[in-house]
Image 1 (spheres, rainbow, N blue to C red):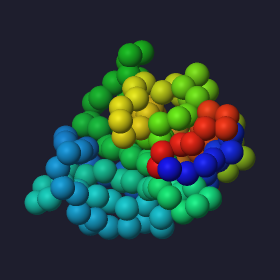
Image 2 (tube, rainbow, N blue to C red):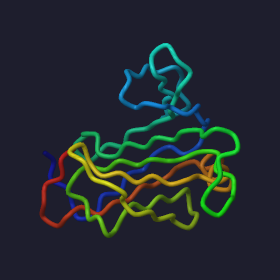
Image 3 (cartoon, one colour):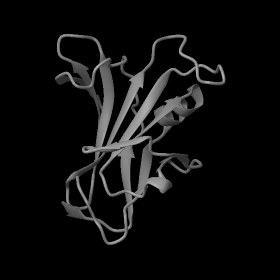
Image 4 (cartoon, rainbow, N blue to C red):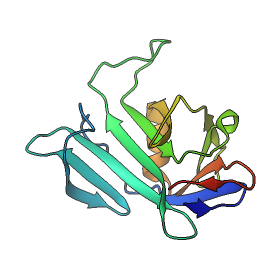
Length: 158
């Protein structure tokens, strides 16, 4: 258990983004196949089902944010019919303010916000489609800042 301030902001590396092939099952054992800066390409053992990931650490060095980007099959469309080449998943520890969701800012660009979808014993998760413009921002950026709000005066599991 780690004691966090009300606002938890982590900076992750944004540049050197390379999209990994979709991973059908995150439950399988993953092996690191490649790295791009702080990003790791992890694939299910003996397959080409991969995910690109990065883990953000809190002030005490504990893992607190897990970010995963998966390439989707060609032709995947959003609800409005626009192409969705990838999806981003951000997992935060229990104890975050659900109403606040997650905020992701690439360099000095306008922050993108997203609500938490579900919380489980391992933490709370946000999943959002990534259109071409969002992917371009990630690829060209030098840093991304992920912000979640922790419950005041509470301990957040990490």
